[in-house]
Image 1 (cartoon, rainbow, N blue to C red):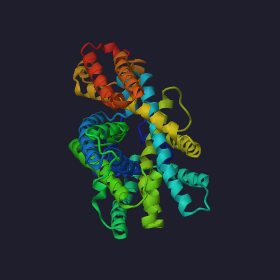
Image 2 (cartoon, one colour; image 1 turned 120 degrees about the vertical axis):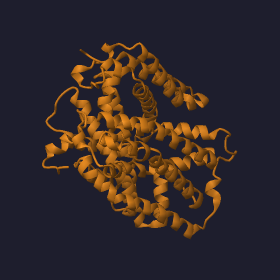
Image 3 (cartoon, one colour; image 1 turned 60 degrees about the horizontal axis):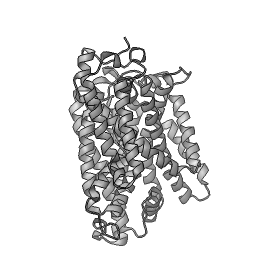
Image 4 (tube, rainbow, N blue to C red; image 1 turned 45 degrees about the horizontal axis):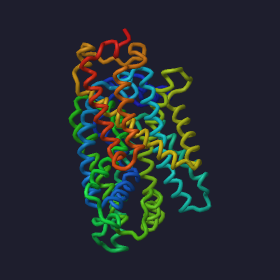
Length: 449
């Protein structure tokens, strides 16, 4: 594959407004290295520990394993379709919801990626401020943003795969060293396997853990935007390994068990990303900052990249600006920095809860579409995503998406048991409405001409 010759080449290689052609697909190992950057967020470490403390270690492990299976199965379907068509979430959403309806999905995806970039970047900034107290948090945050933005100037095909491939061994080594130092300093006990609330673990706590992991189904969207760069002859590899069960074993189970171990072994460790950082600093000193830099920088290459690409795709629907993804990368950096300085984390978490329901509904509609042959019958085997050739709104897709999301939000607001059913109910309702509606779908719903 030819190297990048200019800034214009970098923007073109991202294909934010067109399908990725076969000639620009990536070798399987290169795409694996780029994608596995997503597995190293401390967020997954914290979630595993929090689930164990709230619902018991056994329930947390069961919930993780069920999530690994569910994620692996769904992403096998989504990744195959993305590889076959070369479409991104933004372009595929035009088929499902129409050119204007797709803007909502693109906006949600972009905002979610920015939110995660804020969380993960803040951890590094706090680490810098902790190790070097003379550097105030606002300067540390600026440092994080200033080095993060240029990291995605290179394309996914020619830079992010190499960068994250180099960092992956250091991430794995960091996990092993942290566990070894914890045992050496505090000794080994099986407390981490017996965590739980004071009143005892709830009988069906595993279900609560499984549902909680549905809140990060945005990883399905992440998968879609990365998988489109896969070669068609590598579909099985990507479906079963790269975007499948092995990836989520590392992302959810290994990270979750590590979080449980840290909480059960290191005294007075809380269940926030900052408290995990503090525990690592106690064990590893300044080397912990390097480890956290590796983990958070790897995941933030994905967050910044996807935020920039989807922001570019969103704005391109309305107007053409004189800069491409590189300019949008800078805009994303500005948004991230402002949010890192603002005390908005509680609001961001609330926004993510609602957006998570919309994401689950999107996944349900996408699965119903891909698993049906009705669209192929209407399209004669073609896939049409160009904005001038699809209607502004697809009534079936919009109806299924918003109908499912409305039910999910209503259940979430009801609280208690209803809240725990919000994500599963959203998925079932969205899939059923779209699948049934496809049977009577009209060609005009998907094609403007």
